[in-house]
Every structure is written in structure tokens, then in C-alpha cells.
Amino acid sequence: MKRSEETPEERRASLLEILDELIQHINTERMWFKALCFSSVILAPVSLVFTLYMFFHQGILRVLSRLNPIISRIFLFYLFGNLLISALWLIFGLKEYSFIRKWNDRFKSYFSLKERLDRELREEFEK
Image 1: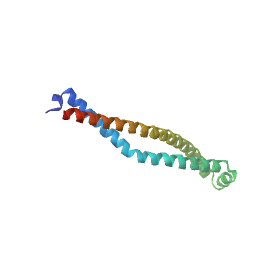
Image 2: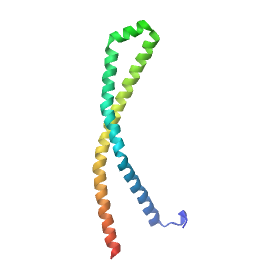
Image 3: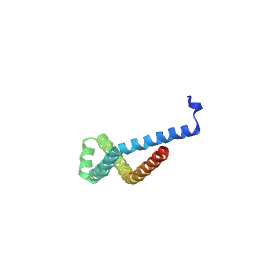
């Protein structure tokens, strides 16, 4: 049967199957998201502390500016970039951690509802 000849029920069923596969895929990939969140919550603050230490430690900047003013400017640019990226990474990690935590609860309720619906449909078709 061609795609255009599908009935609305068949299209709805295929759409539900696609959505179900997508939800299952996201659930299996959530461990990677947890690892990303964990790394951002641990590594971003370490990077922020290191960057702030380097930025406010005047001896390092003085020595660099005496050795080579261009390298000291590049180093300052690097520190500002690192500060910005680390702050964004920390914010991203915290937001994603909150989402993943909510996702786990939603997935458990979705999965239990799906199982109950499948069981009821099986019982209905067996009659």
C-alpha cells in the first residue's frame, strides 16, 4: 500500500510508533546526558576558580607583560574567554541536570501508562 493510501488510523499508529521509538532512544541516551551534566557541574567550577585565580594573581600578568606584551594580551583574552565559556557550561549543566531529573520521573509514568494501555488493548483484542 502506498503512503498516500494509508488510512488515518495507520498514520496515527505509525506516528505513535515513531514517537515511542524516539522516547525510548532518548531514555537510553540519558546516561550520556547525565555524564555531560556531571562533567559540567564538576569541571566548570574548577575552570572558573583557576581562571579567577590567574586573572587576579597580578604577579603572573606582570611577568607575562614584561616578557612579551602581545602574549600577555592573548593570555588575558584567553582568560576572559575561558571565564565566559565556563560560566555558560555550568549554567547549561545545571539546567540539563534539572531536565534529566524531571525526565526520569516522566519516563517512568509514561512507561507504566504505556504498559497498562498495551495490556488493556491485548485483553480487548483477545475477547
